[in-house]
Image (cartoon, rainbow, N blue to C red):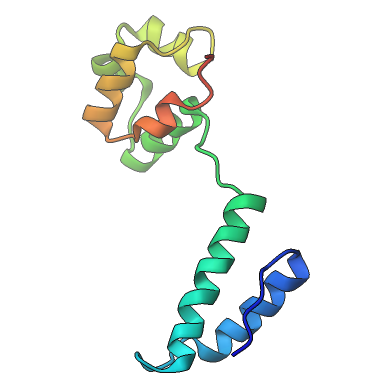
Length: 120
C-alpha cells in the first residue's frame, strides 16, 4: 500500500480508480485500511477544492414549495400577508429571523439554507 497526499485533480482521479478496486474490501484487511484512508483523503481534497455551499434562501423555499406542492398562499402562515410573501419570493424584502424560524419549524428547511447569504 502506497498512500500519498492528493494535490491535484489527476491525483484525485487516481485515488478514485484505486478506491474502485478496493471499495468492497473485507474488514480488517490491509485493503480495507487503505480504503478508509483514501476516502478521508478524497473527502479532504474535495471539501477544500469543491466546497458545497448552501443554496440561496429563496431558492431553498421555492424548492420546498415544489416538493410539497405548496403555493405562495400556503406560505402566509410562515411569512405573513400574501403581499409580504410575494415581496420575499421576488427578493424585494429580506427574510426576518421570525420568518426564518417559522419556515424552519414548519417546512423543515435547514437553518443553514435560510441563513445563507445574509449580510454580516
